[in-house]
Image 1 (tube, helix red, strand yellow):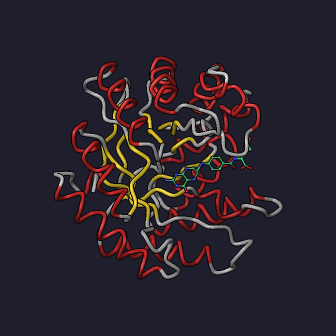
Image 2: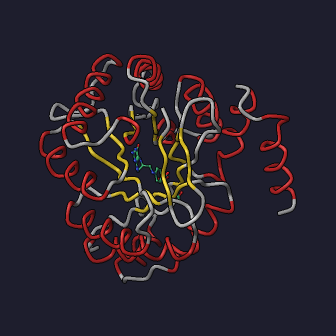
Image 3: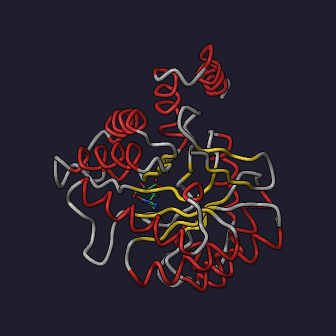
Length: 286
Ligand code: THG
């Protein structure tokens, strides 16, 4: 299955056997005091800087999330999406639980780039979420991330996460959204709280890939939350997840991009190690 996204530059194609696509996570105020403060003040300079830095570090798509306490997302999210689109040419991923903000951001995206195809983060298996998000995604011809959780929370077995993925895909189809426009997120939780959490997620990814064939995303750095040496754990987890069928990790490209390139090379997805070597040279040059 091939998922195609488009910003103002080249198309980005997500699919098995292809290079892993990096969805840059850093335009997100969660846990960032400085960015939260700037967003509340309506200052988007950090957003502009992060957009440039992440693309330079190898991000293929940028997540845009301005959800901090005191922010009017319906006002600020379209502005942030516009700024990111004017700063870099990669596809954007509109990240909000607020339907008004999502509609406003999708409208601005369409106005600036009628031929573009953004990603929406996210819908889940809750009835309210499906009813709120799917019509907008269909209206604007966007692609969508489907989270494996529903009215009962995040299922504690891979089988139950697969069931939620199936439900989201079925509902999306009723709105005319094809499977190729859905990226399933099996949800990574910290192994600091439950040592089986990583395994449950990895197994769910394998099952989604085997049984549905859908492409997958994952906020992979959640796996190490609250633990020391997060980078080692994130790197190992990413490599296994990619081998299990993760196509598009949501990560900080500057921190873990090299583990992703290493995994792609080890899996035979980087002919002559060109991408791996090129990225190494680029880092060494500063
Ligand atoms: N799935 C989907 N979307 C997601 C997530 C997911 N969006 C949000 C999140 N999870 C992924 N994005 C982030 C963004 C930031 C951080 C982690 C995940 C992060 N922030 C630092 C921290 O909390 O320690 C802040 C410090 C800093 O880096 O400056 O780690 O799972 N679909």
